[in-house]
Length: 109
Image 1 (cartoon, rainbow, N blue to C red):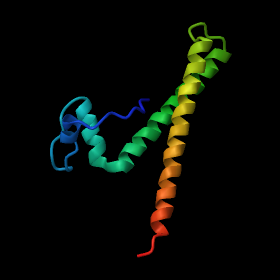
Image 2 (spheres, helix red, strand yellow):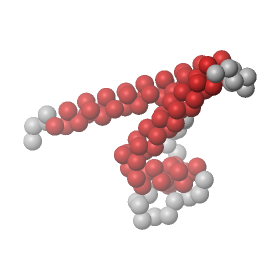
Image 3 (tube, rainbow, N blue to C red):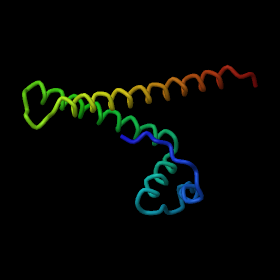
Image 4 (tube, rainbow, N blue to C red):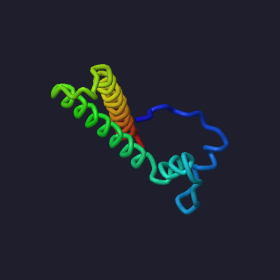
């Protein structure tokens, strides 16, 4: 789960093309693919990432409680914190989107 924002450079601007243009391979291709799908696709991907982190955290908790010697308390706690931070970030984005939607709907035309 990577929630870091990268600065906009000419390399990343080139990947933000219309859906008809081909995208570059590798990491730039993933950025281009997210841009092609729009904000909804990027948000869906982020939510899936948060869900995967929560599932991993839950699995580590279960394994630790069962006494698995390969799962440490530190790894379990770190995973729990990562999933909590990801969930809080997604919640803040959702709240901001709802506030923006409410503001736009309350505008006078």
